[in-house]
Length: 328
Length: 119
Image (cartoon, rainbow over all chains, first blue to last red; front, side):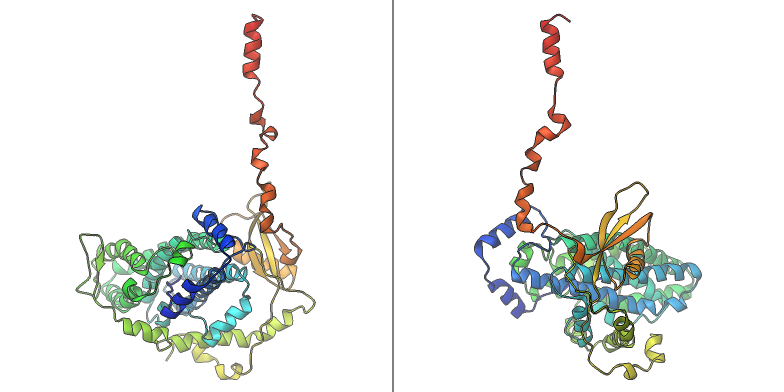
């Protein structure tokens, strides 16, 4: 699972202003435009390295934190089959986090440092995980639509230029397709079930509609672009393009079940562009800056896991071993 | 009231003091063999302190689905590679067509010989 990330105006300025060795830069850019991948040992512009670390790290944190709202429902899954699927999915998400930390680690930032930066609030994770999963129907909506949105994002990112990130994403996308299918199954089951089940699902859908629109980040009109990041295939599609692709794929799958979305303005334009009502971008900003319904709780759980089990890691540590950056 | 049982049951404050010092478990390169007789293929890495633990994590991370015959783990520090600047040393290899079976074509010569000698 993952949400899109955007640059602030200042960050975009730094990326765009950075100066590099022109000969090496030319060779690097030529390689990318030929469609070749960049590998960890290659020369790369400092901003390429920095923005990739930031992006992959946020992606990794999103997987780890994203497992929390679903994890709480394992003990309350309605039957054994759903419980098995949910356990498998949550384990996958944590595994995805590990794969992504490894990919970011090849760029020179250690996994421990990334975990510390998550706990201190220095690194972000996808905003969508700061909302609670109040009922089992929320788990259906998350499994179907949040994972669906994440797949849109991840399939696009897997066409990027950094080899280790692409390899991790290929494995992740394969496993996410199981998440999506089991989520859709759960969603359809509730939508075609009893009156109570349908109501529960409709209410969950109403709760998740805005966070889902927020998922891909602010509108292109209000977010910063970096031509360089596009050219270097770090970012491959704009926020609005990804959001539109998501709406195109998933709104029909919601409506075909006789469910509704809480937005009277939502419609597909003749040009194929979806129109929707203002999803309250101020709320998006508030939540991203820490003031969401679950921000504190999510970090508290991570902090607990990290600190309460510190002694285990310390006991395992072999001081004679020398850490080296992983290669792939 | 949180829905997360860990929040409700655990005394978080008790474990919430003190700075965490960053310390690193070493990494292991994992090779996955999906079937007996097939080549083990590099799958990714795991963090672990011993080979046994590395294998355990490798099983969880890279053998959750599908078929697996075996897994190998090698300390990252024990793997050597060429520098990527040295990639040029492999550049002319595809030109060495004399190493390919397809380079050796004798049929035309045989046919020419046969027609000349009325065989």
